[in-house]
Length: 341
Ligand code: DGJ
Image 1 (cartoon, rainbow, N blue to C red):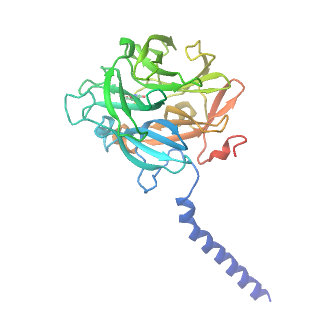
Image 2: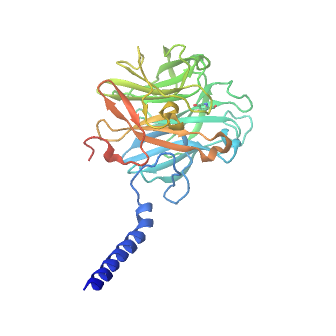
Image 3: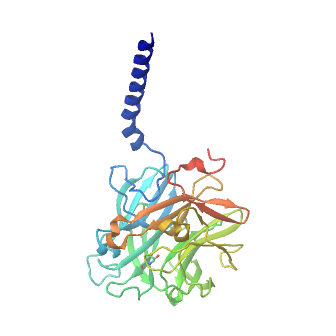
């Protein structure tokens, strides 16, 4: 009797093991989770190549725009352009190709070998155009040009047509983001004055230029990598200090107006390597569509020696009474947000 029991137990264990093992690849392929810092593959199994990301939500689809990097340190410059991926659920991303191509004309502002960083896209309801802004550095000039570039498309995934590059309000502009407020107005938030001070400018109604007004924020704080989100009438900022490609402690702030005054809140990162923002630098805060209080912190773990292998750090933002934290998670999903369903 004993022998029969142990044989059947063994059979049960073995069959459970086989069933579990046979499910493993399926579970992996369909994983509805985020694994910050691990290689993240698109729906074809190719690592996602979209750094310094910006996002657009358009009619049920998320669009992820980013710097398409090539291997080695050559990847720190633009040799291909801005890539685009789409997703319905934020976990699985389909490659939609290159949304904005670098130009083959060596005299173009966006020539192969220029620097094109941190693309951000908004839809303009007046012109029905998708408008992309990005940080642009002219070929062969390092980071001296300090401009923004603008490109437009009739379709969200592109192809985008480059329009022009310039210094907004005649002022230097490096790391940048766009923020669209509830009333539809849009703003450029950018590291200016040689990165010493940020400028916030309201965009023109067609989103193709800044208006002639800018506000200086974080004066003399030397910040970059700006990302803005809004919750319950308050504006929140996350950014970084300026240490090139090397990570440093993130910075957060809150304000009643995008123009300030901003109240500094310190480094929101929590957990291992929080002092260097988990080895990453902010690029965007993505609101989950239709889910109040659900915001994703989106950052880059740069790899300047092999730019193509930069990794993505996506983490849930934990909102607090005034301010927020970003706790480290090795693997997580959208149920991490309170009352998410
Ligand atoms: C940090 C910026 O945030 C990046 O976008 C890039 O410009 C690097 N500096 C270059 O060192």
